[in-house]
Length: 251
View: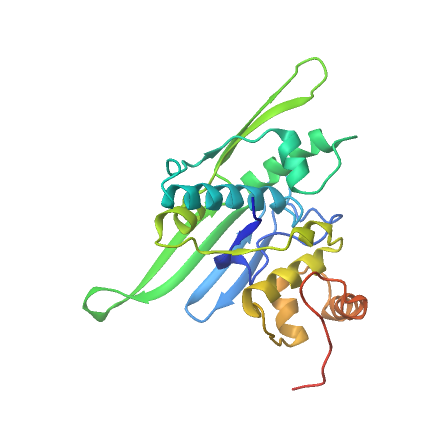
C-alpha cells in the first residue's frame, strides 16, 4: 500500500513539530488570502507530526480502497478504519517493543482533541460575500481493545473525519499525493514539515520559499532566529528523501 497524504493540509503544519513541548490548549493560526485556519490543542496536548503518522496510514488505506473500488475490485470504504496495532507500527516504521503499544492510545487522544477551524470568505448567491466556518478534528473518534491484565492493545478502530473522507472518497480523483516510504525515517519535526512542503509545491521539479514563510507555515513556537538555525542545519545535512536542499541569497 503506497503512503499518501491529503494535499489540502501539506503546506501548513496542522500539528506541532516538537516532541518536548506539548502545547496543551494552545492555538496556531494561519492567515490565508480568503480567510484563516486555526489549529487548537485539547487537554492532552496538540497532536505531533509523529502522531500524524496514524492519519497518513488512514489516508493511505482510504486511497487504496477507493482505487480498488474504481477498478471494480471491491466496495467503497466507509469512515471506520480497523487496523491491528502491529500493522500501525509496521506502516510507520516503528519497533513493536517497549511502550509503543501504550503510546498509540496517547497519540489517538491527541489526534482526537486537536481540531481544525477553517474560516473562508467567498461569494454567495446574488454576489454577496459570505463567511463560512467549519470545525473538525484530525480524527473523529476511536476505540481501542486491549487485555485488562497487561494493557496490551490488540486492535484499534479509527473513524475518519468528514472533511478527510470527502477529500479522498467523494471526488472524481482522491485529493492526495504519494509520500516516500523513507519519510517515516526523517527524525527532526522540521525535516518532516519541509519534506511535506516540498512534496506539495515542488513535486518533481523545484520550489523556493523565504525562511520567514517556512517559519510562519510551520506553526513553530520558538523564535525565528532559532528556527532559522535549525533550518540551516537541515539544509546542511541534506538528507531528505527525493529532494536536495540549498540556501540561496534572495529578497
